[in-house]
Length: 145
Image (cartoon, rainbow, N blue to C red; front, side):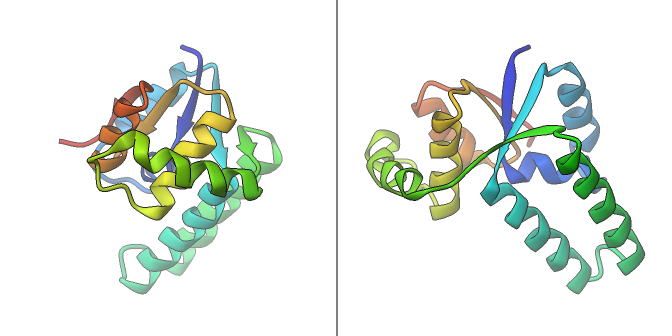
């Protein structure tokens, strides 16, 4: 398998046990390289904070997961796609390419990051993201029912 971009819905499954976590872990183990964006890093922290607030995880669990995620970032476990104005501009233009999929703002940014990284494969646990990725002719690995 070549490089694969993990959107946040797939990325989070590496750190929190939930439906399809095992499948994502197995998938990642087969990838040659993993790609995320700067947006993914921010979203990871937001998702984990929300899970703490709602009682889905404990403070201890959050600290352990945060330590592991930070270590993965420091050890270049992921190639990180930087963000600049060109990503935002391209995201606006890309919206026409996925019609009629009701693409959300952050999903548009993720898909544009995939293109900026020259990656052709996306892993997601989000049905709308998967539909949009297919319209962009990305090889899409989906982790949902």
